[in-house]
Each structure stands twice: as C-alpha cells, then as structure tokens.
Amino acid sequence: MSGPAAVAAFDVVILGGGSAGCVLAARLSEDPARRVLLVEAGRDLRAGAMPEDIASPYPGRAYFNPANVWPGLSVGMGRAAGNTGGATMRPYEQARILGGGSSINGIGANRGSPHDYAEWVAEGAEGWGWRDVLPYFRKLESDLDLGAEAALHGKDGPLPIQRVPRSLHTPFARQVEAELNRQGHASREDQNGAWEDGVFPITVNLDRAGTRTSTATVYLTEAVRARPNLTLWTETQAERLLFEGRRVTGAALRREQEAVTVAAPRVIVSAGALHSPALLMRSGIGPGRALAALGIPVVAAREGVGRNLLEHPSIGVSAFIRADARLAAGDRYHIQSILRWSSVLEGTPPGDMHTAVNTRSGWHAVGHRIATLFSWVNKSYSRGEVTLASPDPRTPPLVDFRMLSDARDLERLAQAFRLAAGVLQAPALAGMVQAVFPSTYSARVKSLLKLSTRNRLLTALVGPAMDRSAAIRDRVLALAQDGVAPLDLLCRDEDALHRHLREHVGGVWHPCGTCRLGAEDDPRAVCDPSGRVIGVEGLMVCDASLMPTIPCANLNLPVIMTAEKVADGLRMAKTAPAAT
Image (cartoon, rainbow, N blue to C red; front, side):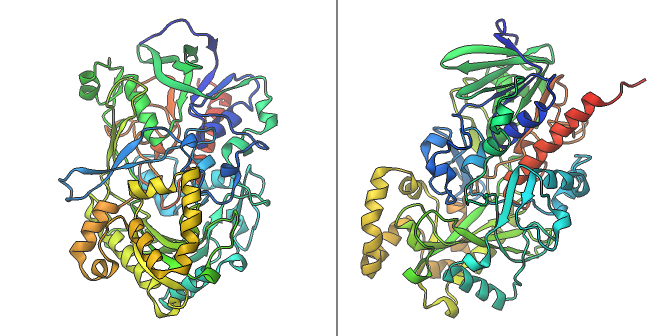
C-alpha cells in the first residue's frame, strides 16, 4: 500500500487536530530536533480570532453549527423494538475544526473516577491506573479556584479550570438543588475532588473572561505555532496510511482538492473514536474478512478495530419555567450544577449516574425558556461498532451504538428518568415550573436547534408568545416532544417508559473505545499500553478510541490527559539510554 513520492518528510505526522492532536503537536514539537506535522480536516482556530459561536460560554450554537462538524454523519442510537429491531438513526455531531471536541463541546471539565482507571488496568492497559494518570490531569490544568483539595489540582497547565459558583446560579437551579438535598443528595464543592455522590457546581474549562478554551488556542499558542519544526495543515483530510510491509511510511492526504503524500517513520492517528478506526480500516488494519469483502488489502488483521464502541446513553425531562427563574439573557454558561449519584445496581461502581441541571435548553428564544434535567448513564456497558460502508474516504463510516442493548443501561436510565420527573414535579418547584414534559434530541428537534436565521427569527416570535398564552405554549411543547408518550404514562407504566427510552435514547457526544488499549496477546486490543498499534511498526493511535471502558466523565479532560501521557511516553522513549 505504498503511494507516490512524498511531497514532504517529517519525523512525526499526527492525523487529526482535535483535543488530542493539538496536545501531541504542542508537546512533541518542544523537541526542536523533531519535525512535526499536524493535519486537520476542518478549518483553523486560533486565540484572538475565534468565531463568536465558539468563543461564547454558551455552547449550544457551536455544536449545532454545520460549519463545525462532519457533514452527513448519521448513527444508530437505540432500537425502538428492542435489541432485535432496526436502529433508530439520528444525526450525530462530530467536530471538524482545529481543537476538535474542545472547540465545540459542552465545556464540562471532569476527570472521572479512580475506579475508571483501575478498570482500564484490569482490562490490560498496564500503567493507566489512577496514580499513573493523576499527574497528567494536574499537568494539563490551571485550576482558577484551588480550594481545600488543591493537592489534587494543577496550577500551571495550559487549560484553565473553574467552577460555576452557586452565587451565580438561577432560582431554578437553586430550587432543584434544594429539592435534591431534601431527597438525600448532599451538596458538595469539587466535582474533581474526592469521588463521592452529591450535587456539585459544575466544573468547566472557561477562562477568567468567561471564554471557551480549546486545545487549539491554549496548546497551539502563537509561540508554539511559530516553532520552525512544527507544520500545521488545516482543511486537509487524511485518506489512508501508507506502508512498506507492516511498517508505516506516511499518509495519503487531500489538501486543497489535490492528492498529497507525506513521509514519516511515525504516524499518530488522532481522528476520534469514529474516524480513527475508519482510517485504520481503509488502510488495511482491522477485521480481515470485512476488509477483504470491501477489496481492501489486509496489512494487519486486528479484529478489535471499530469494535467496543461506547457512549453515555442519555435522556431528558424538561420544564417550561417562569420568567424570573430563568437564566439571564445573553451569553452565559447554561449548566450550573450536576448531580452525581449511584444506582446501586449490583455490579456497578459508585457514582455511575449523572444528571445535569440545564438552565436553558437551546440557543434561541424558545430554548431560553426551557430548563432540562439531562441524565446519562455515567458507566455504560452497551457496546456498538464502527464499520466501513465503502473504502472511499468521502463516505462516512457506519456507526451503530446499540445503546441500551445491555439491560443494566436500560434499567438505570429508567431510574434517571423517574428521578428527574420527580424533582421537576415536586411541590417545592410548583411555583416556577409551568409545564413538565419528556424531551428528545430527535431529528426534528435537532433541525430546530440548527444555527440558522430562519430558526432565530421564528423562535424570536414564538418564545414571547409562549409566555403570554398557555395554549400556544402547550402547542409548541407538543412539537418539541415529537409525539412521545405523556409524562404521567411514562412515570407509571414501566413498559411504556422502556419503549420511550429505546426509541428516544441519545448520546452525549462521548464516543470511545474503538481502538482500545490492552495486552498484546488480547485479540480485542488494537493498541498496546503505549498507544502503539499491535503488529504494525511506527503507527500509534491517541484519542478517545484508546479507552478500554468509558470513564464516568465528559471525555474532553480524559482525552487531553491521554495525549499528555502518550506524548510524555514518546519523549521518555527517545531520551532513554540504549539497551545493552
């Protein structure tokens, strides 16, 4: 699978400029003798020139802006008729811009549980236990609060971390926390402190000015970009890897509509948990029979490529709230607190559930009037897969999450739904909650959330009308519910609730696990604990696809930690004395 003569040669080529790729480029280019190329399919993003929708502390415009995501990506979520039925297909937003998910995500910044990383070690990822990863979590962050548990936090890293203080919480968020306290959930201070259940002010990666911080802006600073040994190519798509036998020699790219090849003795694939396995498979690394069926010559048969796909299954219960309980107008962060709680289902770890208190549910005037308790299974077990529809790099991969295929996930998401509905219907919230309803991220609802002039103008008219007229409010909310069963039926009928969850389950844009770490003799593993692709020389993967199991966290910080650790491993390997 060699290609035409390369137009450029580097020591390291990084394919994918997302959360991990930007970190790798910044850290590996610290060595002036190492020539590094970073390739990103989307456009550039730099400090001082961030588009308004990305810089904003309210992320709802960034991740629903078509200019920021891969076009045409649709995925299977759950199965409406149960595990044997057809997949419920939904559009699925994956970043296509420098900084990747850190440039468009929900800005939540949490690490997960020490249990998560012990689980990785048990799955064969030696060297990835909590004590191994904590130094890299500290290295990546500059904690702007540094409270009582300062020993757990970093103060000199590139990424600013802070908590949304309770003094800024809306009346709605405060009343929800009070109701959760009444139900036995204690208030806590530090989401990234000791792992315990409770209600926490959310931890976010916003700087002191309240602006989103992306790895594209805080790792790839102007000083880093000025390094003569670092080359950055944006709007350049990686099409396949090039090999001599089982040794990687470079990559075939498409840059400014022209085919380009680059040479390097080391290539790191950092294209994310959906596109990294797709790139490996297009290049001949993956399940042998499936590749042969597509006419792709097999370089290395690794059955685990594209398998073990994990996500956090999610569901929402929403409320139309009184005007004086809402988040103030303007660009403000909308998730003010989170509830971490334990399902106590047999075999599940503590803190396996997550409920976010969203004080607005959309970027426009209707979403501003709706609050949501948005829950997900923080430690999920349902596994899907990524496969190829075609060897053509212009064709999106086939993605089927098979959410709720593991009965433990279905049972716990039902718990979460009932908890959220109970809180929003509690007598203590009756004065500020004017309607409660089950919400969904269906294709119709997503079309109304898409950033467009039409949606802005339409909702600017409808939003105020909903305040004036209960009839208009109810009609619009019925549209938002997209034909789902009534809330009271879902709360009293377990079968109806399970049908609702199977049909309307969503993700949280946290895909992972498709190039998992593990022992070299584990047929499920794709990469060894250093990130090297097993059976292939010079090729590595570094992004969320490495995760053997899903952390109890938004994935951005664990991905950045992973890139810091992998980069450090490469640095130490280069400086280690030769074996005798």
